[in-house]
Image (cartoon, rainbow, N blue to C red; front, side):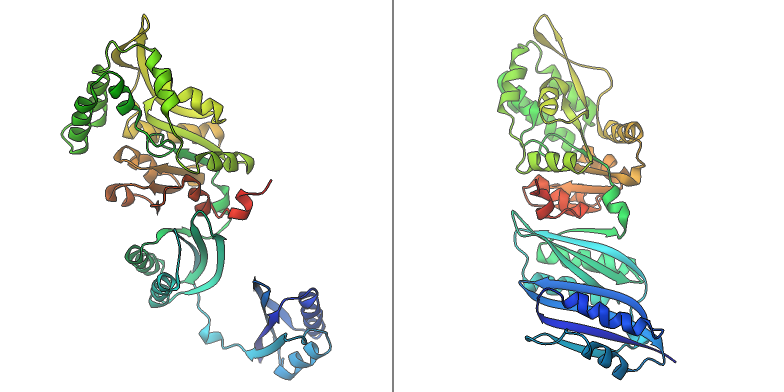
Length: 391
């Protein structure tokens, strides 16, 4: 009969504990036992190291005897041996659950872990990815009913105010090489068309057209043409003035710098205007971008847009084009946006993130962020604060 035992070593961490444990277990291997699994966590110097060992006819006293030969216990460190019940093991596939909020407390985790348990799943590992500027935990959850797990955890997170992403576990998460983001109200804090309208005293008229588009009375392409028409006669020099007023979203520089340092490709697709954005994106080292073109003649805006308008469908086309140019499948792409114009690219990407977005956008996204820090996107890629701040 094959017996399996869980060996748990706990207490104040010190150098050599792991080496001594595996030396003891290697002696059991010489007798035909097998090391089935290992896990460890250390929090503020407190160690919990677990190892599962199994073997035909293996007895608890055999495991205890092997441990006793090594310098494992002592100095408040203890080792326990427990027979494993195979029927108690949860089977199924693994999902990664990422939780983000300004602060995450026990009551919020209680709701999430209650939902995990209710779905018949179990949490295998917890990693604290960040403590500032937001709190972020990543959970590895094992369960058979992923649909029930997703729904339960999503409902719990919404109830207790947690941003959430649920993804299939595996190396593919770190293989998302292309990260495409919207510009206005995502990469930058402003809406460029509003700044241009202010420059010519037509801010209220532009806002009225924008409101009609949001109400569904006109589509984005038509609303853009109408708004740009109001800019006719504006001196082209205002483009530079508007660009000087742009403010990056908090965390935007950190996001771009980290993506580039770790080998990801950042890209920007905007319903705004290349004439305003291109110099800024070049300065930031973003090589892939697309936006609308303002026509300029004799130093003034004509009130027309040149070429094909980058609208909702255009943003998705740009995502697919960039992925093809870089040579990555759509499954290895991320799209980040806040507006209805971003829905198609968010839906098409391997990971779609709604950033401070309206409910209709969040409904089409795999993940949502309600914090004002754009670099929080990195946590959904499994990148910790420590990695972000590494030289």
